[in-house]
Length: 181
Image (cartoon, rainbow, N blue to C red):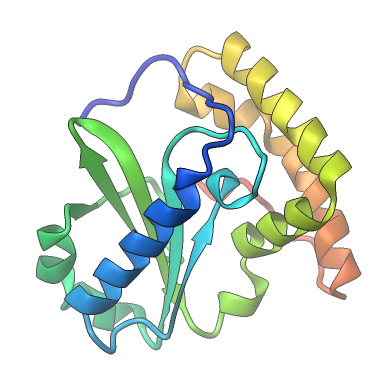
């Protein structure tokens, strides 16, 4: 699968939550007992927020080595391992019709409560002004960028600022939102 050169941002689609529920149910059925928790994350999980139309999921497991044994079950659902330099998780991508449609972050149960993606999602859902500003930033950054990495880097500093505030409100220290090596 090749990465597109342009980043596509779409207005919020209410079907994203249904797509996430269906994907979560399929994951649980394909790998019973593997996941301690599975949630919809990312911009598609925030009602009203514009997003790249890719369903983000995060799943917690007791141990990352356990998830590797269930790769055939995940592959049966179209999820394939994707190495992008993050060493604290297993990353899987699903492409429907040749385009990335889902991304699954498999993390440890121990790290689950302090994961930036979950904290950021919850903050945006509870702070509409931050969500509105973040959506405007995403549209502008996508229009000005020449690809996914440039897009991600372009929105890192504002995302870091919002995440830092959200983590501080929970009594947590700042940790980088840019996770790639």
